[in-house]
Image (cartoon, rainbow, N blue to C red):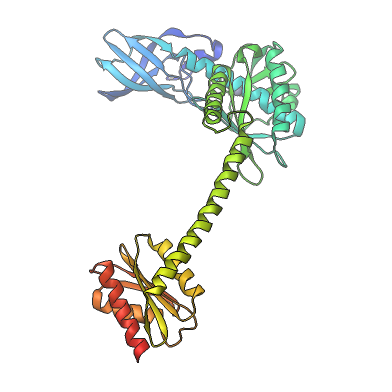
Length: 412
Ligand SMILES: [Zn+2]
């Protein structure tokens, strides 16, 4: 063993929750420090498995461990309470056991899931990550993944879980050919001896540096929660094991039943109820559209009745409460339906002008620009439709400025 190498007790006994160790080095000062120990039960982050958390205690101090990292030298980082620890001191270690155990269940569950997927479809697992509430794997599955395929994978994986299969850890300086041939994935060249191989009965043999349970039944359940395409070649599969599987399922079920309870018809399946509500929404949108057109037609009639006629063209002037998008739709609708019409509409922070195409010799954008020169602001558009804003006057004044310019053109 090298001088500062940390003995990794989580390998010799992954079920060890407490132990004693000696401090080799102390780094940092005050609130946040790091400790290097001669031995540890804290798993350092790696291979998709997050680091352990827990407590390191000595006489007069306590370190709340939040992050553990390092390969040969394992450093424990966290928040210090009490005095600064010193090199050579003895400390008591205890890990957050629930956190670690759920990670062990998850990691072992991933081996099984990946082995089943490869066995059934030849798809490799190209990535793996454990999160606090679920796990994620990436697989190079060709084709479309659906719930039928996922259910088949899940059933076989859980047969292994419930089948009471021993999980054995073998440690080699050099891999025997017999073991190497059976590996699910080839050993990375980065891995240096001792090589740890995880064997799950005749289901899976794979090199791995994580922590695992002793027997598959400890996993409890492997539940796929979600899957989606990540890229052209890769799919992501999210799953949970043990207590996390139960929690995730409850969260999803609570969401499901609460959503269903919020529906006008509370009978399953939710997907049909959502379809009904969406259909209702669409028909209401169609109705709103019809009503809007009817309103526009009445509003248009009223405005045309009191419109001023200049040189044979009806000039509609109107100040509207609607936002610019709606006001524009109305103005365009009005002039399109009525030949020989120009509409000038102003509202909060905008003024717009629309003409029927047959009103020749009057360019909407030119008229608008001339008006804006007098009242300030800017805008643009085409001969048929132009919009402006940023002027310093009221909407009424903006409308009459544009109307004045329209009249000048029509009377010339
Ligand atoms: Zn593993």
